[in-house]
Length: 281
Length: 256
Image (cartoon, rainbow over all chains, first blue to last red; front, side, top):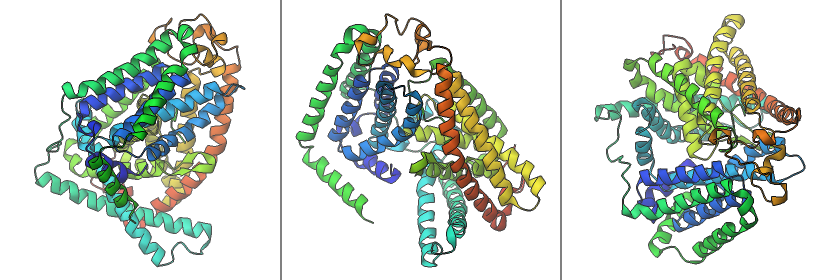
């Protein structure tokens, strides 16, 4: 998934999820992930997935892009699922569904939470230098992509990727990559030095994770309900399995409603502007 | 694909917890090894290399379900300590982007951290053997480090004793196949696809693991060759224009 696009969604959205505190969203994501981990019923896993899609829709995140983004780990999970196949598709499908659903949950989290706020949550759990590394890694992605883009234009203009055979092209491509890395080193070191001079000592201004207030209760309630559903189906599976279609049916109805009811005009317009900006070359 | 793409909830929790403990030791040792005064230069450098690794890992070679890692390159440029920090950062951000489970960040840090450290040590070893051909040394180090980490990854899957023959018994669609076994009968640590009482017949797990290993080694070997070529070229280029990055002590960053 394109990091710049996700970053844009996170910073420019105005939906309920965007406005909720990062701490509450992290807790909600953790609850949903716990549910995905616990449950072995593929229909319940899909229930959580569909609810995540509905939440994305109401937050102005393009559902199609979230589906594509969350499908990526499914490709790799398929390799593991292949090893599980014994003439019964349910088990491999559950494995793939778990991978895709967990991905959708975390993608929804980062698509609605600016990264400084997300790192502020992580700061509570990890040493400061790790968070600094995380921050610089995230910044460096953009620096590196920018350098790589410039270098690749230069390589193409000089015909570096035409002819020369596969080996020659690989050599040129690697040189371009290496040059980008060296440029990125210099740029990143300068950026960091400037940040230090301007008073950066491991934390960014405005990077507050926020607490959990009344407005976050619906989010936490929904997440807790999904986790409880998963745990109940895990624990009482003999009794409940025949009814496992029911939560999925409800979730699908929620998704259809979420798609059918227009997102608020302002949010839609903002989303359209974002899409236009993203589509521009 | 030298690290675990196993989703959350498949590996037993004791293994997941063990992974976190070992990863914490790795990262703790790395933090001790990286001297405080060096962080001003090290943090941005680790950031760039981690970003490069992230970009590589996000580029999937679809037909063989492989993605580049460039972790050996990270080990060569950053050294083992900073390389482990980069590995942890990469895994954390990858998990945030849904690429790999959140709970397996610890295990993946162990696997990729091993890859980084092995890559660094092998590069130094091969550099002495092949002389003034850093690209070749890097290529050889890449193949061996990836083979090692892939074996470690398969070992972890084997250690988890995942034998999914009866996995649907834990709550899948058909209630007729359900046993009376309580999935929490052995506590949360028994959270895995097959509970002991439903254990697969001897050999079943092995067949599954063998199939998994064959698939990973067969597809991975193609990826290792691509990655070794790319890493070799990159190191060769860096050696020509910024050789100090490949030499201990001259880059201003600790190689401890």
